[in-house]
Image (tube, rainbow, N blue to C red; front, top):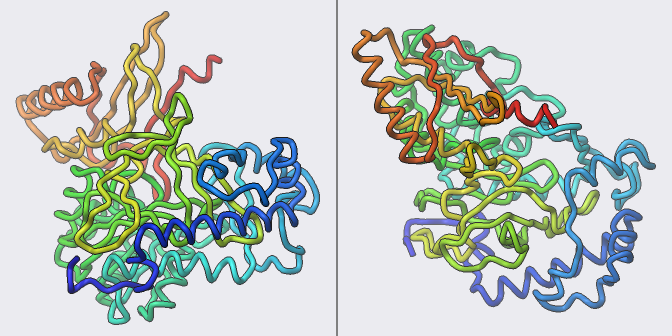
Length: 446
C-alpha cells in the first residue's frame, strides 16, 4: 500500500474483502426488500419469477433475482405515476431532482431522485475525485452543457463537497472555455475524451495556444471509452501536459467505477455502494477469474427513488488483478469498460469492437483526432469504410506512408481490411458529449 494515498472514506475503501462482501449482501437484501414493498414494477417482476426478498441470503440466491434492462424502464414510463411509471418507490412530492439519459441509444430514460439519492450520487463522485487527487486547493472547470442530461452534474456537486472552487462553463463556446481556464488558472476539468481532444485542437488551431502551457494538472473523462485506451490516454496527456483519469457510470446506475491516481490500467468498482456482477456473454454464468471478459450486471445498493437492481448495463469488462498500489480492496476491471455487448458486431465474420479501431488511430502519427466508421453491404458482402482526418498538410508520399501504416495496424489489431478515406483537419463532425463515430448501416435493412 502506498503510504501517501488518502481516501475519501478511509473505512470503506480498504475494508477486508470478507467484510465488504457481507456488507454488500446485507445492502442488496435491503434494497431488494425496499423495491418489493414500494414498487409495483419490481414486485410484479419478482413475483412472476417466484422470488421473495426473504429467500435471498447468499450469492447464489442473488443470481435468482431477475435482471432489468433499459427497454423495461422505457416501457414503464407510459404508466402512472407520470412521468416515471410504477418503478417509483417514493411519493412524487419526495422527488426533487429530474435527470434523463442522453438518448443516444433510443428514447431517454427518466431518472427521479430524492435529495438523499442526490447526496449519495455526489458522494460516489467525491470518492472518485478524491482518488484522482482532487483537493480543496483545486479550481475545477466544468465545460459541459448544463441541461436535463445528467452528464457531469453530480461531479459539480462533488467538487463543491470536496471543497474545490467550482467553475461552471456551460453556456460558453469552446474557445471561451479555454480562455476562461487560462484567465482563472483552473487546475482541473472534466469532459468526454472526444471533447478533451477537441478542446486541444481548438486551442492550437484557433487560439494559437499550446494547451500544455495551461495550469491544468488533471482531467477526468467519462461518457465514452477513451481515457483507458492507451493510445488515446497518451495523446490527451501529451496534449495537455496533465494526468488523465477515467470514470464509468450511467444515469440509471450512478458513478460506479473510477481510475485512481496510481493509474493501474483499469477501473476500481466502488463496491461499498455498488454490487458488480460479471456474466459470460454466451452462458450467463458468473465470470470471476482475472483475464476473463463478460457483461456487467450492476446494482446501486443505496438508491431509493427508482432502484437499480441487477441492471443489465450491456457494458463489457475484463476481470483484473485487484491488487493496486493505492491499497483499495475494491475489484478492478482491466481497461475499464472495453466495449458494449450491443456495439460489438460481426463484420465479414470477425467480431469487431469500435474501441479497437480507436486505439489504432490514436497510435498512428500524422492522423487527427476525429474519425468515422461506416459498415454497409455491397451486395451480400460486408463493406467497412474508415474516414479519418490528417493532422496537417502533408506531401503525397507522407500520406502514402500514413495510409500504409494505418492499413497494417488495422489488419493486425482488428483482422479486417478497410476502405480508407482521408480528410483535411477539422472537416469531420465534432462532438461535445457522446461521440457517434460508428455507423452500422446494415441494421437499417432489418
